Image (cartoon, rainbow, N blue to C red; front, side):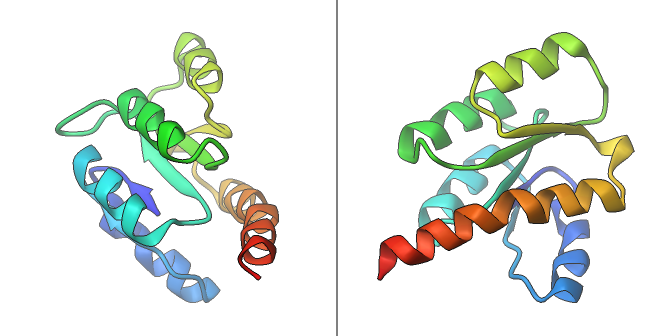
Length: 122
């Protein structure tokens, strides 16, 4: 699931990979969608139109302490990176650096979680 003001642009990437991608443009929509679909991985922008990504991250972690969240932002800033990781983000990338390697990091982060979630459901 991707929560970012530009979230709708990401769906073509996931469709080509055969995965399901749910998007939300606001933090509130993202939180509601998280409850509905329980995604393997959340890609969360720090700057959202309604509430900031750190607030969303905190609420996601309250709902599911094992949730994997990759925080993204347009600007690289070490203080923000440290804050995101201390708040429980699984990884942190800048939107300017989204590349093939970043996409492979997303796939790598979601795989162990997906396997664990499926085995827990059996």
